[in-house]
Length: 318
Length: 165
Image 1 (cartoon, rainbow over the protein chains, first blue to last red):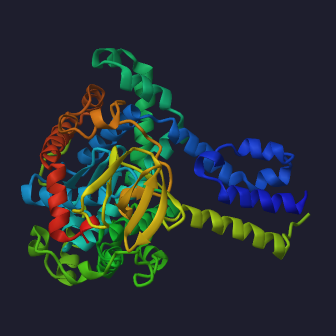
Image 2 (spheres, rainbow over the protein chains, first blue to last red):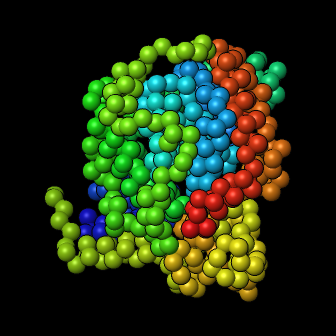
Image 3 (cartoon, chains in turn cyan, yellow):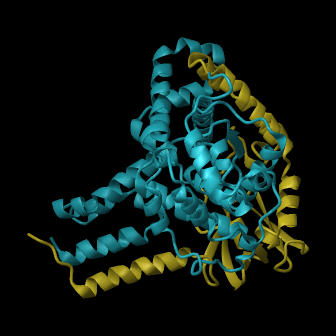
């Protein structure tokens, strides 16, 4: 294998825009389609195919998938907290972030799950959920923005849709999105296929989580979104560190995410990564929010909610 | 056979990759894309400055100057200042709202935002015994629709966030 071709083709891969990178098969063929080149590009090729699959999911499909996944999240985590002040805060901070995200035109909706567990979830098409347990720790807007920014990054990165695209259940979803309710009931096979696709997503969200690299990428991307919007660069580090100091129940905290220490370690430096125009001003100003008033000091509260984690919900389950 | 790329070729690869990264960054001399249905080009790098022009979704803009978090951009004869957070380094993929209509006619309207779950999602909820979750989600949708874009902008202004930093 010609080393020059291999090296330059790799460079071409790196420099190619995402859309072009999808045609890796063509690139490989043009360069002789040798075994070594194919092997070198294997990972990127897989990523390209996944992207191609995601690109095939249209707005209607994404909306239906998102709603179905959101239903599962809300059902599993005890329903939604119906508190106007909390909802107002979460949606103002969240929508403010989403405005500067890669997909500002989505219908962004932010809800608080009535659960003591410490976690956050997102569903395609703009649904972001944070548990009551985690919300209690977001005692200023910098930390709340960091948490929401991470989830927004999962949606703009279409990470959940990537799972579905790999599962190849899309044709069912497409038909479902177009069909009327009465018709849908008759399409049993498609329903099963669709439900299988949604369960692939929820299984990832609830059990194993996204792969670590996806989570780290969401950390970086979400953190950058928070900084661009004007929140403190250290917001995510602060909330992760606080979770890390929680003396008990670590396994119940962000259980579907990579280890906290590793996430903290991989975060960019908070002093070196300021974007042009952004300042650290907000880190000094904790906004007087409902959560700020309600959240107790770190150590006592951490112990309390760690002990309370995973207790049965006060509300009826679905 | 084990492959060992020469340092020179690796340097070329690295330079090409770096060049691509720099090209994507929002810096003077580079390009940016609009990601909203409509993006205002302002006469000054300030959020409340006069609107000098408007550009539609997905337009490729030339970055003429960067001043803090603000970029002076041009789209043909139209030019003006835009907060960097309102632009994207890469071309946005979607040109339609979630209901398949143009962005202006779909997800950006209050009516669309207040729409309850789709019939297919309703069916999914019934099938999966998630009727309480369905009610919660419909409540969330209705509540979120009451938070207007103007309220979000006022919040950003009060908190000195986004382009109001």
